[in-house]
View 1 (cartoon, rainbow, N blue to C red):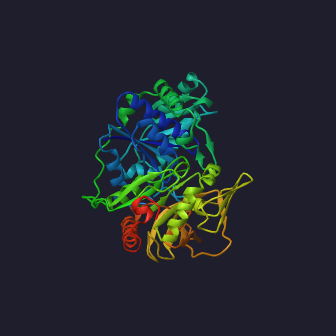
View 2 (cartoon, one colour; view 1 turned 45 degrees about the horizontal axis):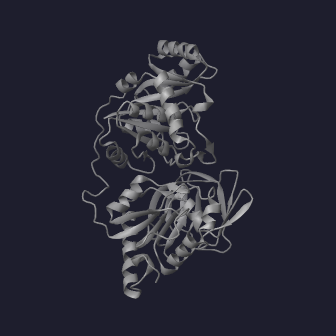
View 3 (cartoon, one colour; view 1 turned 90 degrees about the vertical axis):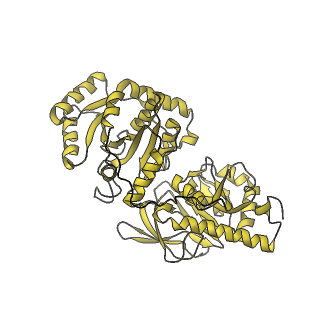
Length: 471
């Protein structure tokens, strides 16, 4: 398996531009390319998927143990000709000031993957060689296989920088991209605008592919991507034989709700859930036969007007909550279940099974890895059980009245904060948990859905969500 880590000298160096451009250019050459993203990012993988036609996956060395990371990589890369792994922040940036778990460098070493450094060379010539030399010497055990220059002023500028880097460091420069605003992807408060919302997405990806094919030596990229086999995990977390479908689980997925780890969904399916995708923007009812509901993260605030107008689905969800249907809501899902969201000065009424009013803020409220301890039993965890995940949001909730909190969150500094709410048989919070950090939670969720369905059969044979008709 040829594989390559596309790392940045810093955030904003052009990692996503280079990674997506490489994925698209190699795919256009007929190769099967598998994209990966370092760390807890839902948006960049959407562009990888659009460029390659294969579902991109996250490789997170803080939320998951090493064997689980290798398992995700090997499962995802199966059948591909080359894996392109986009890094996070700068190459050595991890938790706090360290370069251990969470950093791109740590992941590259875990997967024995060659690293290509993306370097923004605006205003630099020979100084670029000093930067590359520093990155090479910072950790000599890391395989720095090449450099790709971004924001070059011209081909002549790129040639000067290439000459200096190769003469002083011996690290090959594989190519360059000139400074071109037309290659930039649109952004907003959580990073890039998701692929699902990007106007003329394939046209943009085509421009990136053309720029990379013109400025980067793709044959050299393929040569440096050669690597030894990835060590196989001693213990795998996915069952060898998945459970047969037992229950139908409604999963919200559209432009407003698109933040899911593929492994979370696959673990649920392996535990016996038949995943039934639906759109809270368009569908007026849950999928017929649903015995549970999974509301992932996303941008419900951007689509708040459309979500508020779909009152039929809101009423359906309120009835499902009252009946005790198991539900899990993460970040954007939490916002949707609250009474209202206030966005850009307008107030939009939403489901209202939780009393909170959500206010979108201009300042980031929370960002980072956390370990979550369950403070109350829920469809995912029993009291006291723990799972790893991350939080990232620009909103706050004025709860109005107290509900039992879902989790105690502890960040890497040891700082604690309670988060979310447990109500009826639903758990909702800002937490984005990775189920592979505690696979039993997928089995618990499916078992909770099965118990709900069984109880409905006993007390209400014509229950709407089992039979798909009005009770």
